[in-house]
Image (cartoon, rainbow, N blue to C red):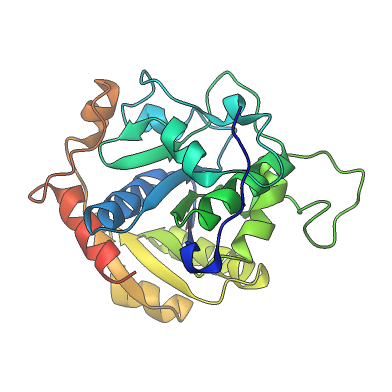
Amino acid sequence: MVSTAGGTASEQGRMIGVVGACGGAGTSVVAACVAHGLRRGGERATLVDLDTHGPGTDLLLGADGGRGARWPDLIGARGEVEGTGVVAALPRWGLVPVLSGTASGPPPDDDVVLDVCRGLVRAGETLVLDLPRPGGWGTATRRGVGAAAEAPASAGQAVPTLLARCATALLVVPLTLPATVGAQRVRDALRGAGVPDVRVVVRGPAPGSVDEDDVSAALGLPVIAAMSRDAGLARAIERGEGPAMSHRATLGRFATDAAGVL
């Protein structure tokens, strides 16, 4: 059971949302890298998996066998949740506490997601939210806006409420024409959710002639970082090792660059 307690305004953290322009954009990898880069830079950052119908972010990171709490274990975390207790209970991917879903457990209820995330922010954690695409957001109930009271609770319905509190959202766009066109709808959804600052991360390689300047011009948004292809990533995930994050590694360099502008 996670205990409850308040927090002071001076301890407040922030939220950064990460969402893909299309399926397979690499959203979870980008979110993990951003959290890692922030932690490595001295900021208290926690990676929060809100794409809770997926297999779980910790599977991608090679941390699925580690001890610690996942969303299904926090079913009783309600009210004034003590964020420091949640962080202490989470498994870690290197430096980063990870709050992940699971392949077999049920997705968390709307209220659990909101109360846990608020508790973490009160405790001074920067939350890097690994988000589903807009079709999986739903509409926030009870504490959100514009929802029917009888709608079932789910993590997807909590997403609009959390987005409205995000200082920044990162839109992950592969360097292709279809992804760039699809990103326009996601950009509009983020703005409609009340995110004041939407920025772009482009993901290579570029199989055609689309480059980051094209993406920025099409979306009217700044590109803050480019993530190059990591040739060893797929094998590392299959071996249960997770992404390589040394300063010399492709994703390690990207993590430093992205965190530096956030």
